[in-house]
Length: 72
Image 1: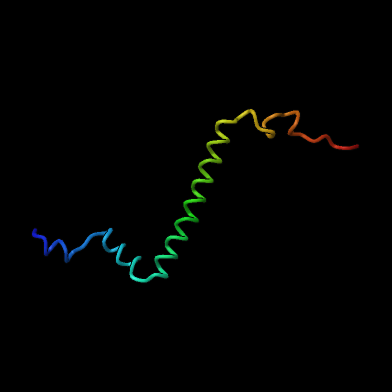
Image 2: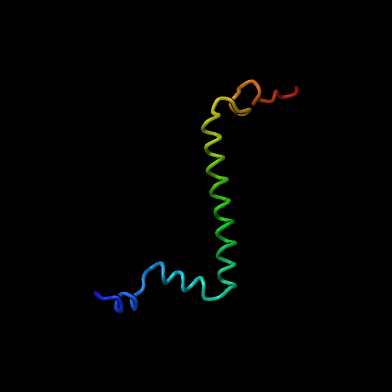
């Protein structure tokens, strides 16, 4: 397989690059959507890590504090 045949086939990343970089509006949308989804993923991961490290120390985990007494 020589260089010319490999170049004509392209690759997954090259095709993706061509689709995203063809127009500025598509590129900007891709960047904004990626930033939004990345922020959500990091927020979810940090939240789960915090909950895992603080089991038994949270307000909801303390049985006396987590319950409200009913008013009679």
